Length: 296
Ligand code: DMA
Ligand code: MG
Ligand code: MG
Image (cartoon, rainbow, N blue to C red; front, side, top):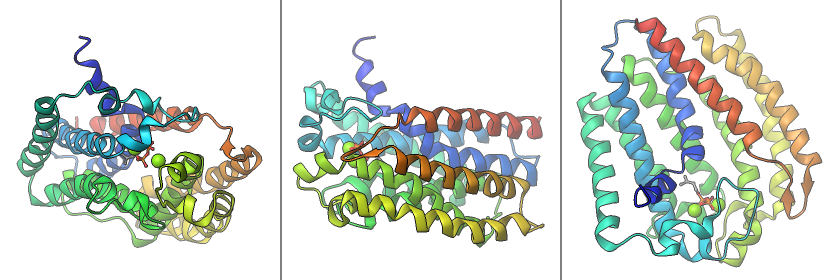
């Protein structure tokens, strides 16, 4: 059991679930639109997602050893200085097996669901894994692209979930709203990392623009969610899930932004991320149960 622990650490479940949220939403919408989805596609699709995520998360740890070794922050999902590539628990063979099996699992399970799911789920693995972390691209260490990677990856997660039920696409206004939402959610995490990323020489958005300036940029982004959110809510032909998420998510994001500004005691935001993550996990359970009931 002790030998398996490190793989659990690599899975980084708390963050995994935040990237899984859009897929759960996509699945719920897909199940509404097409209640005749073959049930086996759901566990296979979710399995394909977690293979993609495991690959991405493992690559992030693998590529971040230098920065994670110096890690001393506390407002984080985990103590990065204890990650398996820093502690030396990952042997060469284990490393190759972890990458090989998760990538093969992602591609194989995705293709079993069809080309459409495969494009989005493998796209997710490439954007959130390779483009974000791999030293060739390492978009996590460049201003703006760190945020855009997350917006794109979350979009792929949603589109993969949706494609479990065919070829439906979300309204453009919801995609714009979601992009703003993800940017607002991601910015505090970059801001909290500024001291460590700066010391490690990473030029993230936070390091480049300055922690405070980037943090305050959340305000115009959150406010821009109002008109776009109204467009989504008023779109009577959009799935009810999109309309409710825009209706509830817009005021929540604005209130959350105000709370974060209030808790901004440079260089840290004194907010436990669990406050956001646990309600999101409940929403995931609700969406999956809803989708499963629609299929039953
Ligand atoms: C972790 O990214 C996120 C993914 C998508 C694997 P990061 O390296 O910027 O954050 P952390 O410093 O928490 O590892
Ligand atoms: Mg990292
Ligand atoms: Mg970081």
